[in-house]
Image (spheres, rainbow, N blue to C red):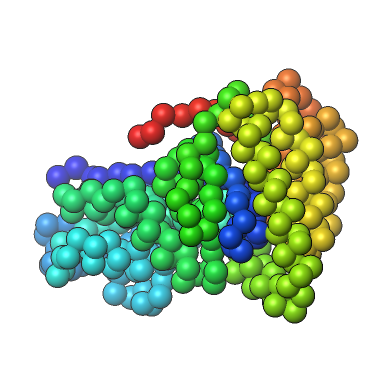
Length: 318
């Protein structure tokens, strides 16, 4: 039996991070230049239930039984098994590779869960629907990010731009005209759970102040939806910079991200902001295509650890 393989893209949040946790809308887009790939190979010579997990990038080579019960890989595998009502798993080797940086705001954790659930359910001859894949990935995210909104697993599962409000049906966004983003990694790893918890603490101590920030960010997301779906996409630039200023007031930026934002704007970007949980991770900048090289070079000189350039455009559902 040949190996069964599934992959999933990275993502960036264009607008609405943190506020989305508190039921304000957000917009996220897939980043197809990076991806997670999961391959599953049957091992008929081994005993039933023997599941070997390999993730060379993090030095993981072990049997599933040796991982703790709350490990995200265990949760994704066991949740898929439960969804299919299987009493046991056949012997197999699961191999995970990824070009998505960890703890950088590109959705590495959700991408692993999505690709793993897809590959495993296909390997077991019962491919799960996108909705079920996303649900399982969200349950894994909840275990490890404290209070995630669900936007990461949604945009990664469907691999299309989404307008997302927690607790409401999401909307796949049409893209009126392609637009170019430069993504610069600050090089600082920033676990989502920590900044999400800090924002929650701040909101509990001063709900009026934080709700005001969330409301303004939500309104920016609504305006951005119109520019993405109807144009002009160049108008997204000032909204990105405005969103960044509100995130700074929320306390989730950092000097390194602030420097990258200022550098991008000085080099001609139309707008720039952090993307994701903040305190590190990535900054994104909206640029005219002809300026992508200039902005990328400036960001590299300013200390960015990694640069990606991605084109956001209309895609067809899988």
